Image (cartoon, rainbow, N blue to C red; front, top):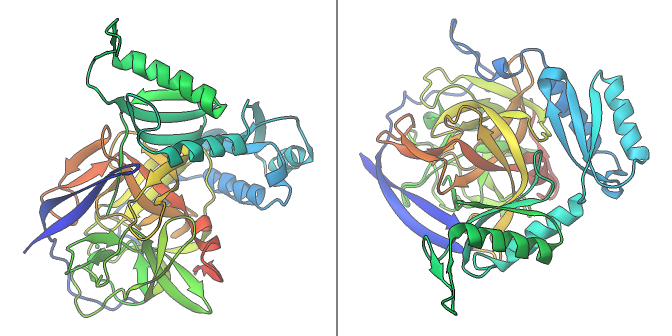
Length: 444
């Protein structure tokens, strides 16, 4: 049976709707979920647990959690951390003089056996975030003769913000006075100079960009629903993924991305159950709380693993630059070896029910340029291993570039190929939960 999977191609304020014809994967019979974690079959490697064999990244994410909980952090020069699990060390990106907060972080790192270094930066976190937000509000046509496609702030390599776009007049342009031609590189140089003077921070401009949403095992789930399950809408023929669950008033609910707007989601191959409808959205993080019950478990393994392989969520994973994460989207399964490369990447999900549909995401790049996420993975989990069949909730899959890193693959729940990328964008689960009033993360 064939279905159309609606896709949204997004570049800031520009929204284009296309469709692709795909066929549904036929899964195993509907089985009751026993609500317990389940290991892979004997001899099958555990991809997620193998990502942190010595537990060193786990120790670094625990330190990051300690750092962001310090009351004085917002008044300090802290910008971000750059982690190196191999050497069990972190570098604090810092603006301004050393203070008690910095000294306390260094001391806490020493207490945990972690080496902490400091790298001085010209711009504060507030300056960088303000520059990104200012540019995002101006939209695609912020600069003459240049189509602005994406904006990112806070990277390990560059002290400033990064933007991507393309000259809007082709490969060369004759100026109004006819005196000379303007090449794409000339336009890029002018935009970089103008943006830097305008925003008050250094700006790196590159060709490319453009973003889109990624709007199971997994396909026959039953309540309480696990993270990473297939959400299929018969009415719209859309596929999305379930996210980590939240608890409100003692009741556990499943979640997904807010741009998954259908009202009739059900497991792809289980018409007897459904995910209910959207109850409310987080005020930050672009997540949707569904009315169906959720569990403290997350689907692991491949997209079509017949064993219901799953792990227990035990808390938050607060990641830093160069940390390694995994994804577990319903449509393409588990992918690991994904490095955090950018913080504060401004993204537009085209959400139709708000005046401004842009929000901040984190960027991950699969190191070998293999799949990080695919269409149909929207709303799915981003995670780090906590070892021994346990994971920490890092975030929620939102989308990826509309160009440059995209390719088609047949290794998805929908055979015939889906658009996948080695670069993807996600929002932080802690941010999502903190902006759903009276909510908490469901753990087991």
